[in-house]
Image (cartoon, rainbow, N blue to C red):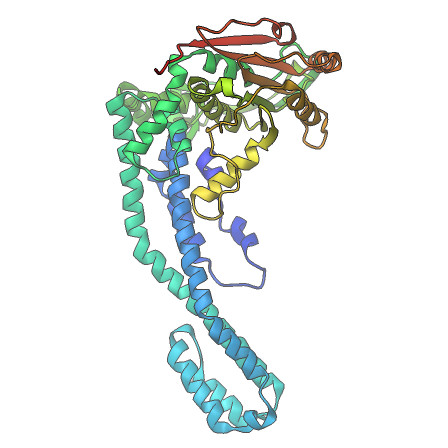
Length: 498
């Protein structure tokens, strides 16, 4: 995941923890994945496009799952041999003294595992020169037999990877090109396409992509969705108490520069030191967005000059003391929110999850009507990501970005109890949270002590926001506005069927 989000390529040494220290076998699948991640083409794609990073993760994840399933199948096929090793070690003294039985076993192993390194001549000589009843002889045969089984499974996996990788890479190129062409042809932005891809099952089909894109484009029709999520995505509390800080380190100073002063190439955002290839991207209309993205993320390729000098520096500043809390979304799933409001909340939830993932923030969902349930969106996202590539069955109650229709009336009491439990839970660190209520606010007022607790959380840094979704025929209620920092309103036309 670090590679898809940040372009971090793990080294071979960093993958050693996947195997025991005494296991010297090469991990063929890991070798291929490292080769794939070091490919400059894929590395550039992932670094310049969040969408392509998501696509790379999905497609490679499916490939890993296929290889893991193939390896598991080969291991299951070897179960009979594992059982025979156990039976061999349990043989009686009479059976061990039977020379013909021993040589027949060696011939069978040589026929099956000669390519896996089984040494028939060595064991014939060992049996001839040692005591057939010596336990060390049979333990050594069992050990070598097991190693041959492991090498056989590893060899079959290598052959499977060699056969599949060409078709896999062709398919990966093709799906990336298809999505890019679709985006250009239909004027779809990178952010919209990334959200639509997350709502899919990890496999590209144009019809499914268009269907999910319609959910995402609801945000264009109702700009309040993006505005309220932007408020939820605060990085720090701008009104929090500040403390004086001193930062020290080294700053790079350039005394002079000339053509002969070039020492090498680095990455950064210095426009005066750009490589010609980067300038060519800027002048190309199709590549301009990539250039801007690389500039904003300080990933432009620039010349490095010898005249850069390290100078000690110190800087006084103010750091906000309030830490960044999570995002808690409370969504009304009562009967009054059925239809258009349900589609609006689906689009909003997709954007909230995307924002929480981008900002690396915890995110929790409470959907409420007659009953109330709380869902950890970060954990659900991990489970969905693994399920999409085939590693784990779906355990979440509903898909990402999709809200269930529960029906019934609306009561805020139980929802507020769950919300307060989260805010009071120090283990989850739900402190200084951004809380969003998505409802028509046709909710009976709760007892006074619930209102008092709302005021307490507001005073200690928690921000409460609201998104009111009403039809034009509904009468707007203002009873709840005094308890929220801001409430956005979306009105829609209710379609009547006769």
